[in-house]
Length: 161
Image 1 (tube, rainbow, N blue to C red):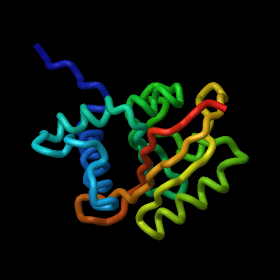
Image 2 (image 1 turned 135 degrees about the horizontal axis):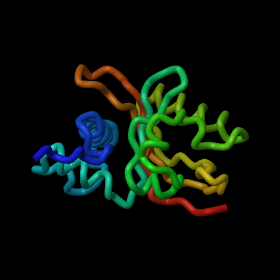
Image 3 (image 1 turned 45 degrees about the horizontal axis):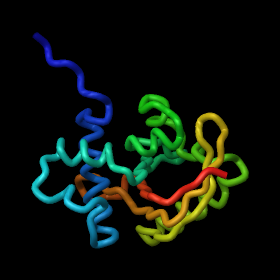
Image 4 (image 1 turned 60 degrees about the vertical axis):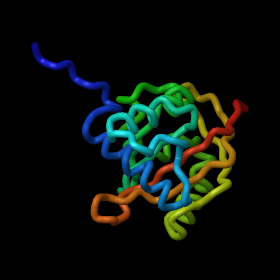
């Protein structure tokens, strides 16, 4: 009997991205993204725990118009999108047009510094509902060779507007 396909957040690519998210956060902030997740966990276990974490975690690639490459369950619920609609979405579309310039400035600042803490901004879910996030951490993702390959964000503080 063939093995069923894993959910997309447990694909080989997503597990690799989850590992990069966890390692990158530790490197950027000298602390784990989530307490206990990195200690003694297999890459699969770490990816599972990151996906179900209460903290919103997402990442985009390093392209000219970056596309989301990861969103955990908290992010999918907040933006009210399934994985296949969120991953691959140009990340600028997570914010309404009036907020995209300030978002781009923060991402550029995070890129130059490799990190940014205390970021706040307004975002919009798939139905047009606005929310404010605060105390977000942004950091650079690195590939297996240590080269920048995208950016990530994590936050736990947000509310509907």
